[in-house]
Image (cartoon, rainbow, N blue to C red):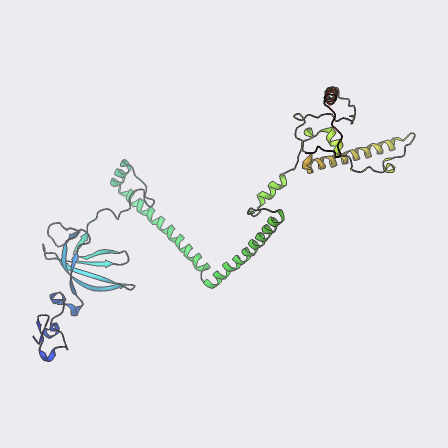
Length: 368
């Protein structure tokens, strides 16, 4: 049928130019938009939490989740977020209750006609945020003592004042260092470049050291503690009592014989007292120098570290005569070693006689 659209009549001359709601002078939302010109729209609102009604003669609480037909209206902005107002009528008493949104804290706030029920969830409990835990006696004393409450308030004010000063100091330091972000960034980059050069230098040195020594491990950077520890290390460090006298005498000999002319000294028939004193001083000086050289060589050469002499035994070498010493115990030990060597020689000769002689061969080793 011409002139009808969705069950609503539209005159033929107006068909296609306006809707049926506009022809009838009504809004698409019906009665909900009666105050749309004032910026008010009726919506279905649900209580976000329990609210005490201030208009009721007796204390009356509106439970959480109760729904109302509320007038929704924009009352402000928090930055770019609108703040909405929901104004509703309490059917029990006819009083108006107004609730606003709080975008800053993502919550609802009762502005008029009521009061949110205090459940204690927003309170700071004992043991949290520096609040001391009180005993039952202390809690009762504070409840009865009004001066204790005043002292707590005074202490809180002093603490708030001190913390406020600290906050101001931190803000001043921040403004001082970051007043010019370009300069601050410039300082940081300058420091980073200097440290980067040092790290690159240490890395190149470590790589060269690895290549030279053939290491396949990552070398850690040096520090003062490692240097001090390395200085204290003495390779082959032997105590004076651990150094064998005979070993020190043999190792301290030069590799090549010196000229006899250097060793020969003129002999005087009867040196004077002054000459004898000078000769004695010179002899002590040379002895001290020789001892220092021997000690230095024994400490620097790791192959001379023979350990303790008590746990070390020496075997006599055939063909080498040892110089007799005045120590009786050493002479007895060496005599026993000589007897043991003679016994081993005799045993070796008897075994050689018992074995048949090998046949003559063209080479000095056995053939396969």
